[in-house]
Image (tube, rainbow, N blue to C red; front, side, top):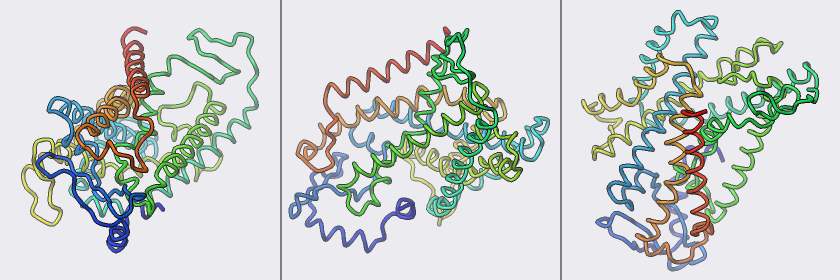
Length: 399
């Protein structure tokens, strides 16, 4: 499943699927900027993703000019924020792992990272994706070790005692040394939830490898339920082990774990981002070029001046942010807490409403048509987004 998610179906599989779905007739021509297909022979399998249209391209096809610009602004700043988080995590982990946690060589670390990631952002993205299989295995191992390590530390420290005063001076609901609920953490909750759960901007690539795409609801539901369970276990074990002393980079919290191999592995875990950073940087660069109507670089052709400028613009400024600050949660709160949150909640509402007006076939029934695109549900989503923005702003400037 992971291999198919990364590489997609083989051409022979796609051709066989096309023949099984019957004749294809386009509903829109390219001049109207939207393309849809109706399967006449198999109405029970009317839906099949063959063109992977990402959120930026979808906005280009169905949104008016100013909404399209707003979408790209959110997409650009959220992606830029992700790169800033990666850059801070890389520099902090390298300094802890190789320099004993000192910051006297901070500038040199950032410079070396710049020299590494800048050339990597010129690589062919398809080749970079081939190593993601190994990255996912390492990530899975790191998650298991974090939960085991935190559980061990919590067990050694003993069960927390119930305090007479259930609330501390900051208004957090405490149980022993464990903060069960803390209003001050809401901005971090919103922002980190965006980084943890927002994949709908890549849904075409997520669903395309499915052999039977009518099972998409089940696949997404199982994936999200599994991810939520993992995050719940990680969060609970972290709180019981470290209380309010959880560091901003959680992988650096296991200095007291007795096995040195596990400590060093978790400390160096963010180094895996060296393989992810170029992929996100390439995506940011291509989105910027696409916004200005310029083609992405051709991996097999010569490197043009605009490719060098766009790659430098996408890959180097996040490292400049890492040079100026190591406050990774502050970066997350700003970029993910505003722009990522907008990209996660309000932009899909706008896209689905506009798309169903532009594409006549969307008014008809098909197996994967969402049941949730109703006025009350969309209002709840938009109000939730607005409430989160208000809470973030209040905590930033007035609390």
